[in-house]
Length: 451
Ligand SMILES: Nc1nc2c(ncn2[C@@H]2O[C@H](COP(=O)(O)OP(=O)(O)OP(=O)(O)O)[C@@H](O)[C@H]2O)c(=O)[nH]1
Ligand SMILES: [Mg+2]
Image (tube, rainbow, N blue to C red; front, side):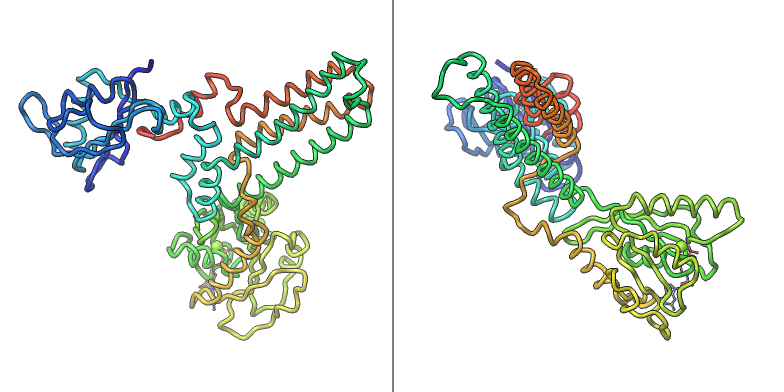
């Protein structure tokens, strides 16, 4: 038995159609009370019906009503969807009528929460729904869809199955030590299995972190000596005059941020104060901040003025850069050049003229190549999808390390089995096989209403 809930599933505003979703035991009978048309309690499941929503004798809206009977619905309960005319007033009036019928307004994510509690989807699939809605680029969308279709669930379930088998073997060894036809859990065997699990989990975590970067956005820092054109590059990528550009060295003093969406990736851009030795207190703080951000960045765009030979500041900066995560930009190509691509054999190098917006496509392609290459294999899209899932996996990894230690120290099998059980539970929280109510509440509170 579940109470019946309703919410507007589409964005409330001016639009062609608004959809109001209702789920629960009384969904069909209550909507039937305010519907003029066929008797909705008599119609087949998964059918759509034309008619009117009415309050006593007043027609409120002309609608299409979809009837979906449990269990083949999103929530596994009876679900009704009313397609009414878009526009805030009509939608609100229909919603008010439903509330007057005694249907409760759903809290954020409550439909999805019911889908989870009724066993239609697991927690990873529930989370991926929001990610699909919010995906900012093609990679994010693809990964969310893969997770929604169950790839994350399978990844975790398969791992837990392996773990369960090991626990079962230990239990059998403890309970029936006299049996000869079962594999003996020697220290060697157990160490080998635990090591395999550790490697497997490590790979999952690493792959997930790499791909999550593509999903959430890559922290990208533009760095270089003053006046080389850093802010001009930011503005060109953002296609707006976000940062102030002047020919005065030291124009940017604090970080200017912006988000750039390439087809496959999102860059969380930060333009920084030009690096130089300075006595100006404010500028000095800016420079220190630039260097901190550079170390923390996942992608560094290091800008040089192609017209000038390297200055001391450039050289110092080049020494601090990690070529693996850096693209070197030789800017101001519209004027005679001193620096050549060949001067920097260990770096990815791109030439730009921000004044004429030249070289920006090459820059975007280079970034795409740098991050997109290894993850072209779409079969490998099974990842832990968000920080919550990775944190739980990390927690499991820590216990697994302790288990490996315990084994080498000759700790009793039943103690080891308990620790392995704890790992099983921790990983079960990713899929929701084991969960706590408060965690569910927090998780679904981040959803939109109507989802
Ligand atoms: N010729 C030429 N000038 C450019 C180009 N890009 C930028 N500039 C000029 O270089 C000067 C400095 O540009 P900014 O973008 O402010 O440089 P910055 O690196 O952000 O400088 P700071 O904020 O002081 O560190 C401005 O006068 C720009 O117009 C280019 O491609 N060619
Ligand atoms: Mg600047």
